[in-house]
Image (cartoon, rainbow, N blue to C red; front, side, top):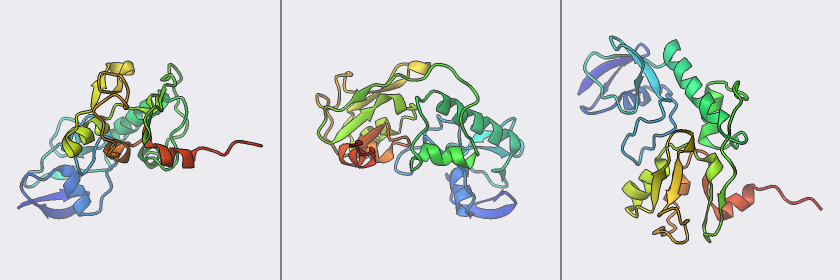
Amino acid sequence: MITLTVDGIETTVGVGATVLEAARSVQRHVPTLCFDDRQAPFGACRVCLVAVEGAPGPVAACTTPVRDGMVVDTQDERARRIAANVVELVLSELPHAPAEHTELATVARHFRLGAPRWTGAVHPTRHEDDHPYLAFRHELCISCGRCVRACDEVQGTFALTAAGRGFQANVAAGLDEGFRLSACVACGACADTCPTDAIDEVVLLSMLEPEPEN
């Protein structure tokens, strides 16, 4: 067992545990976007940044292993500022604000973010709606990788792949021929883990869309 301190609270966790797990053991909230308990930690989004005494800069809580005597500060001003800027940049690339119920919106509220301060290019609207059960709104994809890893690690189907780089980064089904022609088995794991509703179940999506005016 390893003993460390998180926000002044001493806790003991198992060998191999991460800083995120240690923070959760003492009910300290650390926001995440690319993390899903059912998947191996990825550490790509940099939203779970925290300060660790002696470290040269903020570290990703989801991938940083604990060590005996470690001192963690989840409220470090520098770590929170960097993480908030990351989330604001993500929001600035979307054509509209994320739905209030999504994880992305929840994280934005955590950092008290409103409309992005920056204006520039946004992802163009592109919908895949030819699948009987799943709909993919590419413009809401933030390339967190959770859907790809859910398809690979949870379902073992390997129907989704990461595509493009930088601003053009997105997710493709199969060889970008769409869900219907890919190896997708309609398990819904991708929709279940998506933090923005970029991938959603058709039935749920229809319930969220406003009724047409008479």
